[in-house]
Each structure stands twice: as structure tokens, then as C-alpha cells.
Amino acid sequence: MLATWLPLALAAAPLALAAPHHSSPNALSRRESSGQTMNLMKRASHSKANRTTAWAAKQAARLKSKYQVAAKTSDLETRAAEGSNTLVNLNSDSTYYGNLAVGTPPTSYNVILDTGSSDLWLAGTTCTRCQGVPRFNGDDSSTFANLSQPFSIQYGSGAASGSLGSDVVQMAGFEVPNQAFAVVNRVTANLLDDGISGLLGLGFNTIASSGATPFAQTLFEQGALTQPLFSFFLTRFLDVLTVADDIAQFGGQFTIGGTNTTLYTGDIEFIDIPAGREGFWTLEMTSLIVQGSTVPVASANRFAAIDTGTTLVGGPAAAIADIFAQIPGSQKGTGDLDGFWVYPCDTAVEVQLGFGGGKSWSVSPKDFELMPIDRFGLNCVGAFFEISLGSSSANPSWIVGDTFLKNVYSVYRFDPPSVGFAALSDLAQGLNVVGQAQPSPTIVPDPVRATADSSPTSVSGTGLGGSVLDGAASRSRAPSVLLLGVLALFAFIL
Image (cartoon, rainbow, N blue to C red; front, top):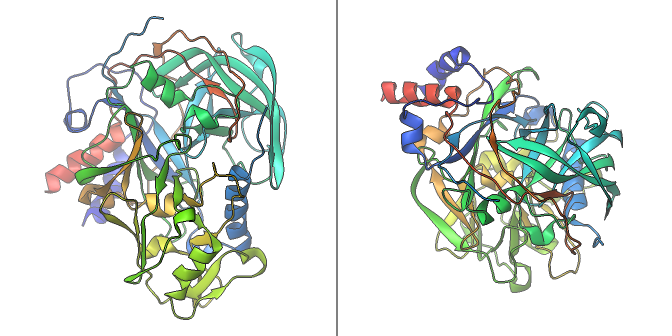
């Protein structure tokens, strides 16, 4: 019922990044915790049938290059924050990304929102393998400062390198006048997609490649967040028939400083991050159930990074083999599908993951089925694949990405350090609707300004770039007109 009337409502709703708006409380602001909010949009692209083995190999290479890295050498005014920015999700749940603005005058850039790293970096004008994406040019900004610090990370399949600078950065109603970030002139082929200029890491500073404090962590440390957390809801379009590449689809919501109670039901199950693991958002995987059968998880391989910036779920080869051993007709992939497993498409695979909190969280069979590999739809690639992240004790054994996270409302809490999951509400599950227009980024004309001393320090860790923010403030902003229209019409139908 919802799918038949909702596209008409969405077509009538204006789509734009929220500008400052001071108004009386409305349905959304009353029902969600105070915090800066970003509404995720999905740009429709390839369905499962149009995916190729090369695409699957790219997802695996991207994850491996991300985690297999070498070591690298004011006064605050705090106010309740409510607001939204429209974001885009690319290629049928492959990447969820957002928008920030850098420089004077400000220029908008799309960045991946990534809980699996801790730095901000943007492609520079001299970046190789960055064709087709907007690139940052410090000469175009009157406030850019070159910090004269080289930036370089070696990957298993390439490298990212450049230098650190600082400039005015705006995001979700916050403005930092001296934010440090990496201006990259070289990246591996698998790090950027069309239209995406960089990455905003949302992990902890202990894995920040530049030694800078991550954006969200500094907001917490300066007391700028109504609640010491941020949260994600991600929609699913993996199983939707192909639509035109220039049509945007609603992709979910990213909220800073709170949660949106309309998007989940019941309590949030928070699980503490193991002591000494505050780098990635790491949990212990304590249970794994496939087709109703328990798959053993070795005690030495239990640590799992919860990662919004990764499409799939990667794990130790033995554990992945045990998963597919529960699925009759499965076989190891070869060639581009090395590390993947193939199974009969007519098998609905049920997987549940547990992280020590007492609950098991399900992965939909729609998400477990990554794509068919033949034109008859007989054999499909599974979204769980083999990955080895090396012998370092700091590396997780599992990377739990969007294949899992689309099935829950996920919350990332700084104090105490923990990750939470909650069941999606009926409203959230009804928002996988095609037909919305592609949003156009806009700059907030009067953002909250914070004074910040941008001074990256030298630390050892893992990640992709650099960012520092030492002061911030939040303020009341209007929620997305799009989501308000959805909620209002949903309430009317009920």
C-alpha cells in the first residue's frame, strides 16, 4: 500500500540540503532526539542482474586496500541541534555518501560516510585516477592553509598520498574555520566512484592516519552533541529492477547527536567496545547462525569492525567456508570471484549475527544474495566473502558492512564506547521506494561557527586521511521537507 502512494508524495516534495530555518516544532522534530540529521538519498543504478564478477572483485579489493595498510609515520556554545541534509547512495546499496563544503567561498564535495576509518580527505586538482570527480583546489579558497606535512599511506594494492592542509569546513550545520584534512594527489583505482571526491571517517582518533581528531569525536569531546552518539538508517534497493542512473532514491538517514525514534522499534541494544579496541567501532562476534545451524566462531577471530563504508561482510576463510557448508550446492568462486562463494539462487539464506548483547540480528536473504552469475539466474554470489587482514593484533578479523547494516538501526556511542542495534520500524522498512529526484547540494548560509586550533600530531594507526576539529556548536535547524512529507502522509494513511 505504501509503495503505491508514496512516490507521488515524494515527487511533490522539494529536495535540497536544509538551510537554516527557525520554526515551530513539527512532527519529525518532536519524535527524534535532538541532533544534526542528514537524510540519505540513493542514486539508482545497477540491479543485481546487471552486476558483474568484476564489480564483485572491485568491492573485495576496495575493502582489502582499506584495511591492509602500513603504519604511518574557545569557548564552546552548546545548543540543541535539529536539522537535515540530503545525501546520496550510489549503485544499489554499494556506497552511502554525504556532502560537505570546504573553503571560502565554500564549494561542495561528496564524501563517503565511513565508520571504518577516522580521517577526512579530498581529491586534489593533481590527483591521478580521480577523473570525473570534483577536486579541491586550495588556490580557489582565501582561507586555505598548507600545513606543509606530507601524507602517504601504502596499501596492499596501491597507495594514497598528498599533503595536509586546513580550511573552513561545513557539514550538517557546523562550521570549523581551521579544519585539517588531506589533499590527495594519488589514490588506488578502487577508492573513489563517480561524483565522490573523498571520505569522512567517523572512527576514533587512535586510527587517524594524520594524527588529527575526527570530526564527530571532537564534537563529542567539546560537549556539542545532545547525546554522545551518531546513528544510521540505510535503505535497501539491491533487489529493485534497474532504473535510470540519474534518478535518486531515498537512502536512509544519518543523525549526529541523537537517534530518530520513528525509524526503529523497541530498545537499542548497546554492546561495549572491548577494552583497548577504541579505534574501529569493534565488537566481538559471539554467535553466527546459518540456516538454523550454529557456525563456530574461533575465539582468536571474533573481533569485528562495524563499517558503514564497506558494502559487504568479510571474514576469515575458515568461517566463510563453514557458512556456505550450511548451504547445499555451494562452491568456491574462481577468477574475479576468488574469495567469494557461489550458491543456488533459489535458496533463501538466513543468517543471524550476535555480538554478546543477548540478541541475534538477521541478515535478509535479499542482502545475502549479492548477484546472479548466469543469465538464467541459477547461481548467485554470496555477500559474505573471505578476507585476511594480516597478523597485526590491532586488525579486526571481520568487517561487517552494509549487507548487515541495512537490516538494523545502528548507533555509535562515544561514552561509554559502544555500538547499538535496534529493529527497524514499519515506517523504515516502507521507505525503499523508487522515483525521487536527484538532490542538488546547497551551502548553509549561516552555519554555527566554531573556533578550532588545527594541529595534527604524529601517531601510528590505520586509515585514509586527516581531519581535526577542536570546537563546535550546534543549533536548531529544520528537518528535511522530504522526510516530513513521508511521515505526514504515512500518519494520514494510518
